[in-house]
Amino acid sequence: MKTARKNCWLALMLCAACIVPLTPGPGTASADSKAEPIKYIGPGSCAATSCHGSVKPIAGSRILQNEYSTWIIKDKHSHAYQALNGAIGERMARILKLGAKAEEAPKCLACHALYATPEQRGRPFEISEGVSCENCHGPASAWLGPHTTRDWPHEKSIAAGMMDTRDVLHRTEKCLQCHLGTKEKFVDHEMIAAGHPDLFFELDSFSAVMPRHWKSPRESAPGKPVEDAAWVGVRDWSAGQAVQLRAELDRLMWRAKGERFDKKDVWPEYSELSCFACHHALGQAKDSWRQEHGYIGRRPGDPAWNSSRYAVFRLLAKQIDSGNAQELDRRLAEVSDEMSKLNPDRNVVAASASAAAPLAQRIAERLATMPYDQTIVLRMLQRIPDDAEDISLADERAAEQAAMAMDSLYIAYSKDAKPANADEVRAAINELFRELENPSSYNADQFAASLRKIRTILR
Figure (cartoon, helix red, strand yellow):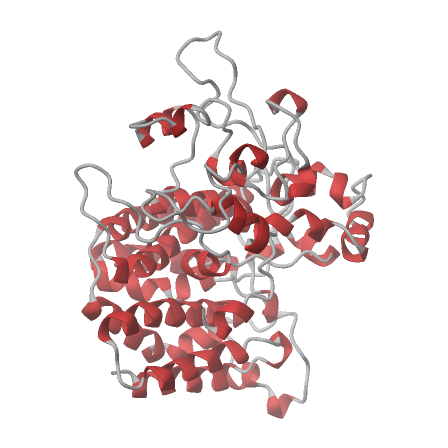
């Protein structure tokens, strides 16, 4: 794995807050109303060497069989609970008046651990084990035993409560429950002020850093073509971007409607805005690239809406679905215009976000199933640098999305095309990440120049 991808995630510790405990998936293991509710049984149930606890992949196996070992040794999620311990966690709990230590507070535990009520536990397990198997794969009491039997179909496991992580749309939605938030669990401006990192996400890059503990490409399902290994990461990036935008619009919608689970009616919610519009280093006016470019689309002094989840994705949307993309552009312009006012109108924001979300979902569904090839990927690698100024001026979060996109796309493209100057392009992409290491020193003009440089050396 490239150094840039290893080091760029300044906040890639599992980071979202929650208000309530986890709830079971489908609710019961069968149609029988008297059936036992599906329960959580902890990661130890997957640890046998004959199941997922092998120290290395098993040759000839349908799965790797070392998934548990990868999780407990390498995966960031296994350390999520530990992030609650220590001085920063204690300080956050004090500032937020949680009434308990962070490692004991439901607000924190539901995204930093496999946190379930006693009634939801099928057997004892330790929450200190962090974010484990069932956080992502669903409560296992109904499917754990049956899914190990010969010829047991994946569909039966799904019916018994397993999350369908093979579906890229469902997988992204599951990740975003903590890496973006829901009505029940989220990071808001209050939490960020207390010390919680701001949230950002990109499925392919975050999966690589995780690291992946599944075969890629996965085995094909009956009646479906085998995935082209060269383009799996591109599909994850593209479909993941669309799902992330749709989830962001859903979040904006319920926040505008005042539907927070904790009933706090906060509007505007500052975490929806560009953090760096306010939080940036101050210097002499003559040296300010922000003042040099002005504040297009908003009154000077009003924070802009955080458009990072659309700034790069819009280029792909226009390439593959111009009709929906054009309408999505129009609706998101309405969102951006209203959210970039000092006191945005809730009803206008909610209506515009509500109209835009289904458009993003339609594009997501197309991206999840369409074929990818060298031509599509190269075109995206060229269009992102062509839009360098707009992306870099949006803010640092948009620049991060551009860097992650160029990284994911070029990894796939270079494997297939094998360009002679791959090392040169890789070095130029790594430079993008270096420019994002210190947000206070971010310079939009410099980032745009580095992005445009990549355009000139792409082959």
